[in-house]
Length: 452
Image (cartoon, rainbow, N blue to C red; front, side):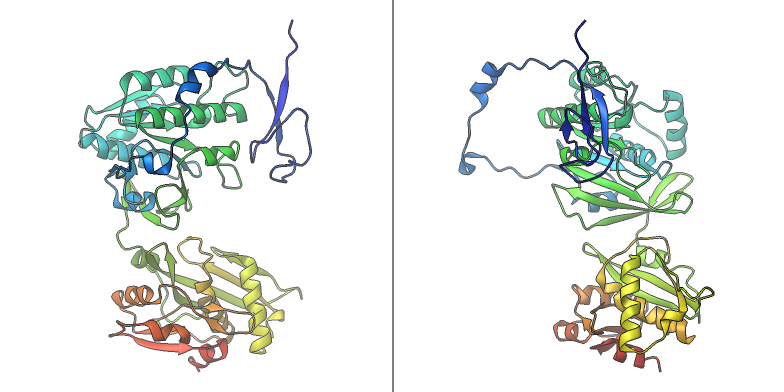
């Protein structure tokens, strides 16, 4: 009998080795190697491929406008860069039960209403289970066809035979190839399946959505090379028990990666949130200390958020710092600025910071709001409800300029805010500021003096 040969793959970057190693040489991660049985290598017809392998100059390539297909969801089209590009391979990841399959089934319904042929391939649910979920969403046309199959060879042959305009694979971890002896969901199986779907998408111009499971760290399970192979990576964020969902583009070869889409989970499925700022500020307490409204930018969209802070005396002598929705290290840095520049004895107090609504923001423009929220809670002084602020704070206490200041002010004015605290260096480039009072500050001392 032939000796069984095994190789070791890194689950993070896909690095291949003939022996196990504690640290991956490629990504420098520890304990990421898994053993896979090497399957028989496929014979390549190099002679036939040599004739087509001819380099061409850039001027010889005919330029064509990208064909984009509206998904029926403006929020999804915004994240994708204006619509779904034909022949693209899109990876959708997120926690279990957050709404990945529901959103894609709603996209199938929207495309089928436009008489676009859609093939939904499920490896986790039966046809009866999909129909129960589809009945809750709405009425579907016959342009949508379903297939329950996990064999990669059968799935690829059906796609070649039917030639649908769009394909949904739910999920890629359940698809397996008989040519590989490892179990479904392993590094080799996931990479082989994704490579096959990439070839089908580029060859036939088919739009392929693949659903990916996520690990406990919140990243797509399988090798990191999976995200490198696809054209677009979308992540669903948010608490599965909360009503809102945020769709964020992590990678996009056909558009920006800064845009987000906001959805609300209801009984009939996911519904778009037309005004995320108003939605995020709903339920804001009145007259409470430690609550400040800030404006962050997600791509080209201004988003108003409530920054909450709770400062209380420490019981153990070692102050605790905790942050939900933003970087804890950034909170520690800003509190050190307050201790140094404003002589606040915060070393004896615990500090808890929260971005209300559960959204995660790391933009430096939230620095000024974080500082004012901490000061407001520390001094038990409430901030005016119609006041909004934004600005980056440096280590010397200076308030630095931020981008798109005018768009932030317009969003605040639209929601009824009357006062805006912003970096003074941004005021010179503002044009349309009617209806809102602007207070430019150069440092945190001036920002805190406003409330005295």
